Structure formats: C-alpha cells, structure tokens
Length: 247
Image (cartoon, rainbow, N blue to C red; front, side, top):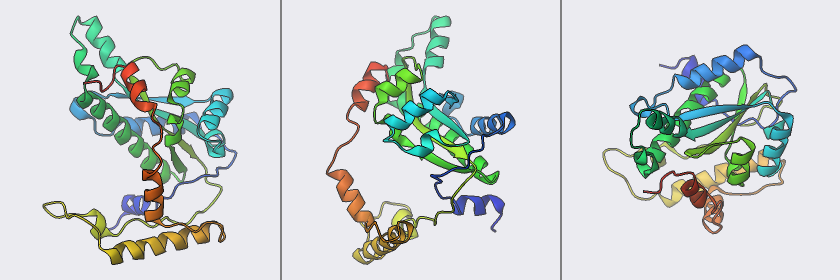
C-alpha cells in the first residue's frame, strides 16, 4: 500500500534553514511544470507564479514577513498569485463582459488554483530531496508586497514558497488525531476532552524538544491566542481595490 509518494507526503516538515546553494534553471522549470499539472477549476488556470530572484526584492519581502531569514536565504523563492487579470484581459480582447471576475466565487476559484499548484510544487520539491516552507506572512503588508511584485488589478499574492537544500533536520510536527479530522457522512461536532488534552501534550513536548526547553505551548493555547488578536485586517480593502470578491 505504501509507496515513495506516500512516504514523501507523510514525512513532510517545514524547512527554515537552507544551504547556500541555488536551484538550477532546470530544477526551477521542472517545479513550475509540476505546479501547472495540478487540478484547476473549469480549466481557468487562475494563478501565476513569480520567481523572485532580485536580492533587493527578496530582502524587502523578508522584512514584510517579520524578518524571517529563510524568505531571503534559500535556493529559490516563489510567490503564488491568485490571478484573474489574465482572464480579464481575454474578456476585454474578446469584447466580453468581465464583471463575473468580481464575484466571491471567482475569488475562491483563483485561491484554490493557486493552492493546488503550490502543493504540487511542494510535493515535487520534496521528492527531489529539497525542502520547502510556505510563507503566508507576505500578506502582513499586502499592499507593499503587491507594489514590489508590480501586481496588476484582479490579482492577489496568496503566499510565498521558499525552496532549497535543507540545512537542518527538524522533527516532524504532530498533526491532530485522525478522529478529529475525519468525519463519516456528516460532521461530528466537537473533539473529546481527552483527545484535546492528549494532543496538547504532544505539541507541548514537540516545542520543548525543538527549542531546547525555551518554548512551552499547547495547540489549544495557540488557537485561543489567534482568536483573541485579529490580524491582517487590510486584506479585505485590498481585495476590493483589486476588484476581487466584492460580490
């Protein structure tokens, strides 16, 4: 039942320290082709990928991301963009009404296409012995990120993907119990208290080991903290300015 693909998927871990070794042009092209092979809703292919090679842009994206060194120091840095601009241009050239691109449904399609493509690339990279780390924090100042990448209207930078040769071997972060994620036929409300306590202990042990005892945190504590502090409130007005998801 198990094969190399399944083994690659089950052994995923985020890499936050890479060797000073750039990816080759052949590797970059192959990773992008793997991303393009992902499923796409109604064959709209509503995403684009920006390969960030300019050291100054990488440095500025690192600053936007909260000074995460691996945004700048990696084998290559990709940014996945939800992209309805290409479809908008096609509509204009064919004298077709493009107002549908402003709907929430089309925004969800573009976000999905970008995510599918990115995960294809991530799995391909790990199968090649490379490491990856998703960088959602490029949205911390989404306006500046868009300006740096010269994004047109009808586009949104979903996340970055740092790829490179791993220079660390982190532990695998425990996931929620199977029974907490998998529901048969209908949604089963609520995890049992024992499940949550057991998982919290796993996560506390993981952080204690990863940080040499400097971090003692539970999963439910993380979730509660995130609920108490709304973040990235500039995203909605930015999306509206970009003509995305307004209806």
